[in-house]
Amino acid sequence: MARRGVALGVLAALLVAGVWWWAVLRLALIPERTGFVEGAVAAGGWGLSLLPVHVTAARAGTGWVARASATRASVSRANAARTAVTKAAERRRSAR
Image (tube, rainbow, N blue to C red; front, side, top):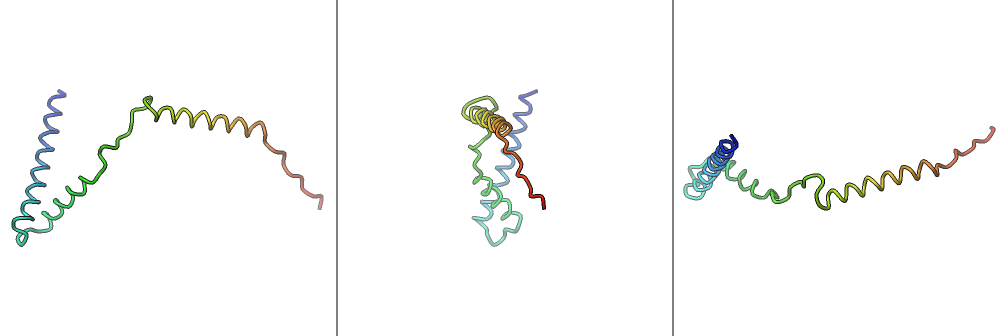
């Protein structure tokens, strides 16, 4: 079952890549006969290539992300405890 999903994903990626190359080659070889669709497909594919796909979310509980989250949580707990203990008295109003 998993192989079928992977195969369909690869097939879809190849189809999208083929359509993009068709649009780019058509723009490069016969620019006078190309239209809005070819330009949009070529520009969209180029724009997608600029996305930072190497930046992904880390899994919870691993690496520095988990340590930073744990540290942030412990600091916020400590701050909450400190403010509960050292809460200043309300300022008295005049008898006017």
